[in-house]
Length: 342
Image 1 (tube, rainbow, N blue to C red):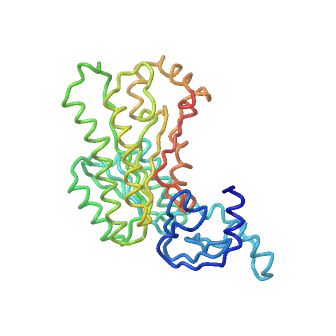
Image 2: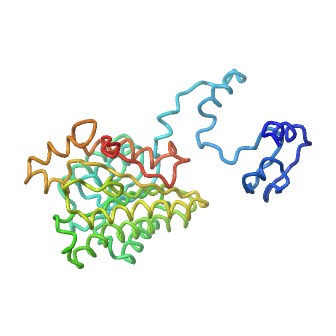
Image 3: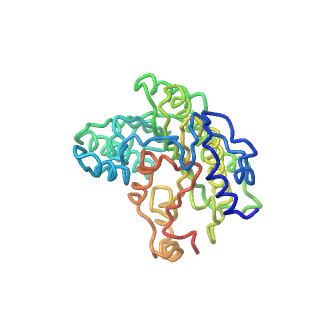
């Protein structure tokens, strides 16, 4: 039967109301594809009741239509409100310095009540203390807290984040950024102990951090956003660099994010990965500061012709953490200057 003819027949059939369950297989064209499930949704001819509503509703075109029919409705720009993290609580592993600290500061600036930085350094760095003092002077007075912890110790991480939950009574955001990059070694002679160390921090540590936050999100039922920091090295192999352990670990993080997203989506917990490209940080400084020629090499490997700055991940992490990205989960966001496009 011709596709348009089937659609015409469907449109002339009597309206059927379903409040739960599945569409029957006899429902015309729908059965040609698959049985689609609906929950607490009324199905009527030509429309569906909304399955979700923006916390800022009415918003976008809906707000414009409301203003057209309601003379008392005052138009207001809400685009930046979508990015606000007002009163939210989060954790950032690897938050003592570098990208982790930059992202922790971003969350504070976006309106978070408290962001806890988890790191292996026994005491905060001077860089971290400067950021703490800076954000404390912001209008809403966010708190940047420090927790000394080894992310490879699962129970310790779970317990530490549970204590945060006990104190704050919520958990909204997790950025699992702790990671390590070891000096280059030939793949055929790569030591088992060093490979295990890299995987322990970059994979196990990311999982344990995400688990700890997710457990508190489930506990308080306030949904949330988990961001796993991967790398473009999880999708490509860095030309001329023998980083088999690092590359392997970051590929694992990509699949971890997808798997967690599928398991936790029904609870409203979103999980995505963020993959930076070549950015000057404490980690990459061990190469760039000792091998200046690498700056030109790395810069030439992307269309923008330069390496990135740590502040260039701020917008992306704010988006992923906020209500501006509520329909984004299981995705990998590449911030590489286009490196992956070549």
